[in-house]
Image (cartoon, rainbow, N blue to C red; front, side, top):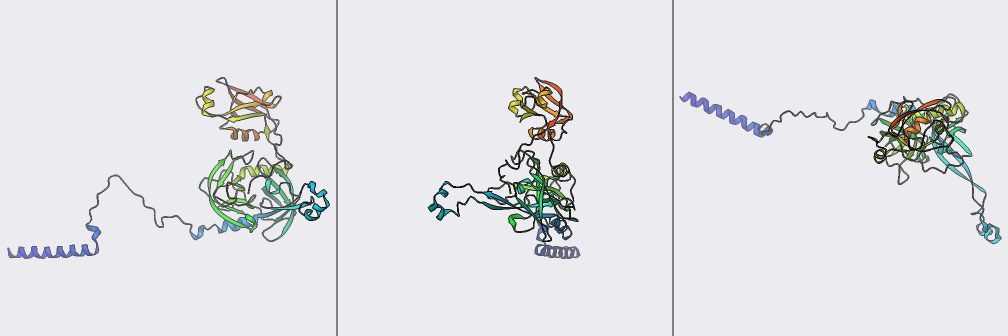
Length: 392
């Protein structure tokens, strides 16, 4: 009996000693935690915030694209209207220099992208609009005069040519390679400070109804784009061209994280046509359309708002000759579905003048197939008549 008591006392002493050590060094082991049923938490590894490794720097992409981006400098002679007071010799003596009607030089700056080794450069139309003199500065410090091969105001694109060979031409990305969330770099000459690279992500794709261009399908990015970046390159993390920086949304004149670039699919198509023929040819059928709304769909007894409402038809135009009538709802062009007026504009513009196309329209709750001979879209704006755009 005595041995049992001694054994119990020793066990109790050891247990109390172990408990004392646990309380002193590992108190968490004594805290009761309820076990959660059916819940598994996936914990992100450290660091919690994803960071680029040294091997994933943007430096290789930047070094690849910087030689292909140029600075564009333009000069334009602006004539000040003569003031009637200049007829007064006394007034002219004191104020004549300020009211002198002689032309004055106005300078502008922008950026451009070398697209071929033999000197073709892609930029924005508003950068070179009405310019009397254009100069291009390469990254090696060389400055060369440039001439305008052609411009397309409806997409705000222009092609320049300089007399040079073996230039570092940029590599074009695949048209459908870009996704929302991808890293992009904007390269240009903001505010004339010199070649600058900024980074951001693709915020959105296919931005339309912005009122910037006639044909809109913008890439939206939060990479810093400022005045002077216009015409510069928007590239992916591999240094491939995905867009041409064109405009920003800003209330201050500087970047506020909403920039827009013309996608490479449009830029390449326009560029190739300009280099080949000096202008861009687009299809046209002579209709005026507006977006369908739920209210309009209900008034036309439609189940859902789809297609585009034909609000007007040009008399004697291709659509009029093909039987299209105001009030028709255009649903498809050659089988391609029409989602809104912007998509319809792009579908028709892509048609080749002279070809016969099939328009699917809804009229009085009936579907009709109409064959239209496509005409050539007249130029909507010209370099001489376009007011200066409020772009960067």
